[in-house]
Image (tube, rainbow, N blue to C red; front, top):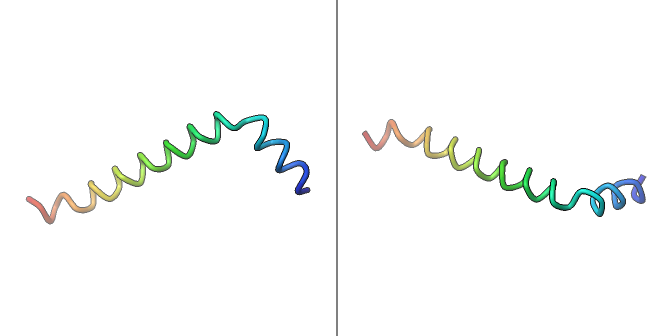
Length: 40
């Protein structure tokens, strides 16, 4: 199981990085969207 996870990570490092950046962007949009009503 651990060997499979390591091989998947080593094969798709760029994809994982892009997915992580997408998650960060979604979280930023969520936080900004939730705080906007308090600013207006």
